[in-house]
Length: 109
Image (cartoon, rainbow, N blue to C red):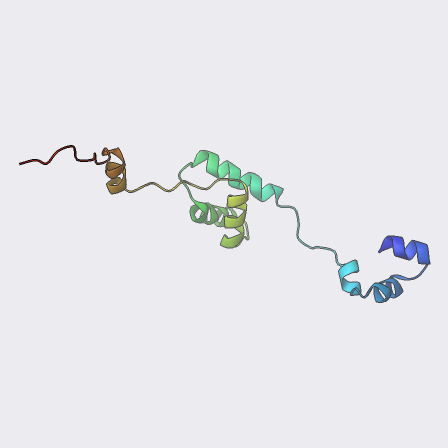
C-alpha cells in the first residue's frame, strides 16, 4: 500500500480505492497489548504447582487480580506446552503388561 502511495503520489483513500481494499484494514491498529507478563505469571504458577491445569491457574490469576478469560488462559497454556498428560486407566495398563496369545501347537485333551 505504501509503495502504491509513493509511486502514484496519491492519498491513502485513493490508493485503497484503486486496489479495492477497505481503508479500515490499512488504518487498523490493534489495541491488544503484549501478553508477556501474563505468560510469565502462568509459567511461575505452573512451576510451583506442577499438577495444576489451566482451570486452577485461571482461578489463581483471578485471585491475583488479572482480568482474564479462561479461554485465553487455555490458549496460552497450550502455546507454552504446559498440557498435563492424561493418565491411562489401570485396566488398560494390566492388559498391556499381559503377553499376547500364542498360537496353538497341538490339540489338548
